[in-house]
Length: 558
Image 1 (tube, one colour):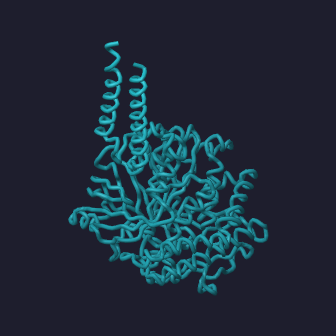
Image 2 (image 1 turned 90 degrees about the vertical axis):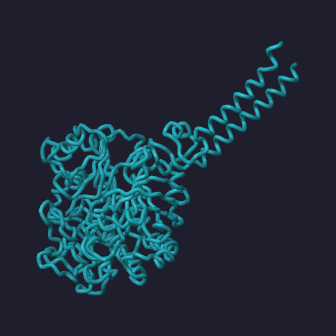
Image 3 (image 1 turned 120 degrees about the vertical axis):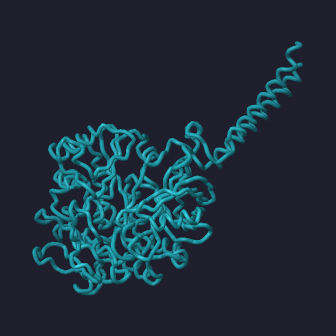
């Protein structure tokens, strides 16, 4: 009996020490290690956390960046170097120190650098200087300047359509950026394709990840042989890869017929459909054959949607042929040509198009959604100090976006019904004449919204009068005699983007948008700790209560 009395007190003391240990080891801080986040994986819904704390679609969150004035000035003046600078950020109330920030983009970065604007897109890298630092599990977020999109809606709407179609889509939302307490601009935040995205969509991060870029060869996915170096425009983004799976996929796609063995066929068809539905020629469909990722999961590749600021006709491509939707020969895009040769796959693809134009893109639904979004963003657009366009041009851009969608949906519907052709002679149908950037004006016309051929209305194709009408586009403001509209430089790299159609929608001259960068990291940490704090506190209180009951019971037994 002499040993019974100390036992409950020893147990009580142990519990107190345990609680102290949890607190002292960061149990109540915002940052959790990957082991801790794994322990609570069953109670924390990653999607819900991201949608609520980082990417809420029903409100605009503040992103407050604090950076040394000289560092920020150097970042702006030397944006093309894409050099990271040290900064701190308060992202929707969540504070992180020692992050990296740099300018980002492809031709959009070059284009902005050739103007008086300082409105660059930015990449925030939360683990650039501190290993395992994340924001709700994300290591990187892109802040896109919505270059060449006076409506501020193209990319948001396209990603939302992709979600509605069931495609693996990065998170996205509108943000108001402040730099050193001064409002910088109204941007679109987009999750970086990386570990967090892969874990959420594929339940793993171990596969091969490639990003299709303009420079080099191979992003058209044609067969160039077994040497992976021949596919230089498919840039590896995963930590390690033997590239065998990539070569096997390309070989089967071009030289075999068992496509489902190496491709997620439904996702591939969905990717093509998404770009046709939004007339997005700044993609695999277009001359540059870029702006997508490939991810391999157990030998099967998925094609991942990326970069949609030029959707809804921003890069030409009005009234394209749904079964021949390429800028250039269809045979040069085997992902489309080979899959659509299979009647079953073609029927699935047509069903995807039909569901979208009868659903999300139908006039009733699309106009309602656009109205909801414009009500949300109107005050932020008005107050945007670095906007590429005026507020009046924004309003006009929204109107013409709606008009373009109506016209594009009608064309797709007629092709599905068979009242107009859906394919041609194999030479492709996407408008190669551009229409992407405003060189002389900052106007807001999406191609295809003016009353006559000279003003942008569809006109008959002289070579094929039965084909869908194409929009005549004016080389308004073109100053470089060597730069024909849509003319490509070697390796399909555009020196400057094609000039705008008359009053073309978008911003300053010379270029187009793009984004990229290193992978994110899902497994590192979860930076949002409020839910976990409550769980830890609750567990501690329950243990403490049980200990008290045990002591009371023990005393009664004595």
